[in-house]
Length: 308
Image 1 (spheres, rainbow, N blue to C red):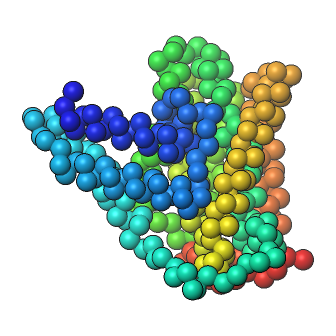
Image 2 (image 1 turned 45 degrees about the vertical axis):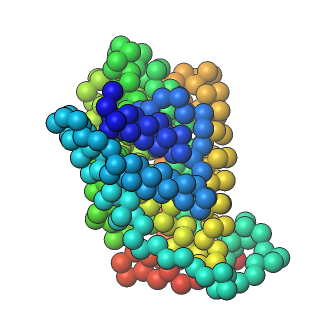
């Protein structure tokens, strides 16, 4: 194996270890029981991995045309995304961070209505949609699909998400909160269709559309909490996001597993999708009369009014 091929393999392996949620959604196995670190340290570690890979790519020897193509592919995906995603980051000087003594992380939910809404939508998506991933083999069996096609079923949404996310990095959405919520609604609708469709082609198309919803959800997931709070509260907001995912996702898997054992996988998936859509509709309608801005075009990212 050439040096560039070896570098590419090591990049994917380390990428999967640092971001197991994304890796699982993209069809990489072996990390489905792990959770991505969404804290600032986690983002920093992933950025360091990208930088180190690009530096190693510069030093790698090109032995033939296959190496040249492999190197260009690795560079095409790593360098632009790294540059675009980090060029706007500004480090806050230590003196600019005020004391937060007497305020716990969870009190941010009272200070920022936008953050509370973002976390609630995050709970709905992880509890009611992403929890279906362990049932992919059951879906494949229902569609009379073999082992290879089961892998395709599991990877379809993740592949589409990867492509759409790359586009959204270059052309961000103008209304991130609306895109975030619409992405969840799209995923839940697709889950309801996937639950009972008997046609493999329809299932794959449905998962492809769900991948678009996952991209809208995932591409704004980390930026929305940061835009919803004051600069010195951003680390705490990301910590709340990570905690929310860590609690909601396994809880949803357990609930869906128990429901599937009692009613069957198809009714359980349909119930999960319908419950999620109802909860999302209630959330949106409950906040329809309130001005909540999180940095979209024309929105304000000033401190949000207190709840209550």
